[in-house]
Image (cartoon, rainbow, N blue to C red; front, side):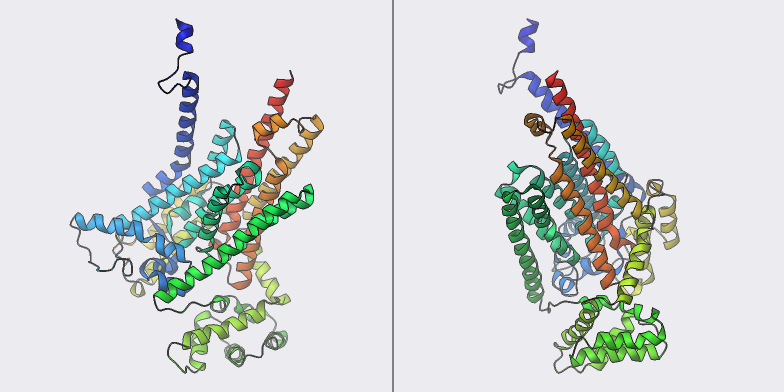
Length: 546
């Protein structure tokens, strides 16, 4: 009778042991999700919603067309409308005294419920993206829990998820892109059009949140090309070609979408890299006076455009007056100096002139320009992880300082129930934000490099042990190590290129280092997960041989 019960099946014909296994798998997923959400629960209970300075304000309260036209990514301004509207509707039904709007899409009204729903949505999607990455990084349940704890210990992820601004969405999209890219690289059987299409959607989302994310279009092409050279496998060239086509299509679609939305709102859409560069051009004043004039003459000689030459003249004029080369001062003088034949052509002409000057400095960067960018990058790599997380508290305080110019947020709980000093005290006193208090970005990069080195060493050891050729064991553990190592390494290198590009174009502030922090952490997760699977495959093969 007991044997019959042991062999009994459920009503769907599945063995009871299979049902138990499925239940355990679901239970482990639930525990992993709970582990990843625990920091979110803590921040939601102890920290008010944070804001990424005036940029977040513009992305929420300006129309998507205006926000996109002014240089912000398209996707965040569109997607936030959903939780904001739901929150607005809930508070209206509760009878709250809030302003009515006839067109919420263009003129949203911010409410505590709407902002709260937005922050919760960001935390949930962060946990989902982290869970997807961990599940694909390793198949061992205990290793998954270890990696989940490691992921949850990085408060930078959760602080950005707790902040209003497009970088929060960009961070989540990068996690999803890394997870899907890992699946495509590691599992040849996953290279179906369904997975390729999903990867394309996520890449498009990355490109429409931050412009510097365009470098991510090179991630899979480079990975497959490196693998093709190392493995001498023509099949990898075909996958590289596929990823190149997808990347190019996403770049074109992202550009055309932003342009279409801007034009629909009767705004012009054009590059504003020159305006951003006004935060970097101040490096000229750090050059010794005897070399400064020669530097400006050398760069100005790279363009013959009259409007650009007018900008160079303005730069010389400001320097001669002994004033700093501030972005506001430069922009106002350039706008006043360039005559406008038509009202609508004026802004574009100013930005075209600034763009020309920026490209004159950037192609190629002068030695002085490059040195300044590297000094900024080096300084930011020495920042401690808690300092970067707490920087978002400082950007929130910025809104208090300019409250008169930013109406529509003063009634929210973040500003109504707190003070600038009190908010910064919360940042310092929060124990979670004190984790990894001695870790710099240099340390994180060293840690990811060490984990990748360990992955390579395990691969060499497996080959010497004679287990790498055990096809069945290798398929079971899913630990094709070379693709994992190449992909993880390129994640870090491309993130480094993103931060380098940011340092060359503008002033590098702590929050701009997020992609490199993120990819260093992700590379570590992928590498450690690969090491765990490789060791498990050795034990499995040894047990089968015994």
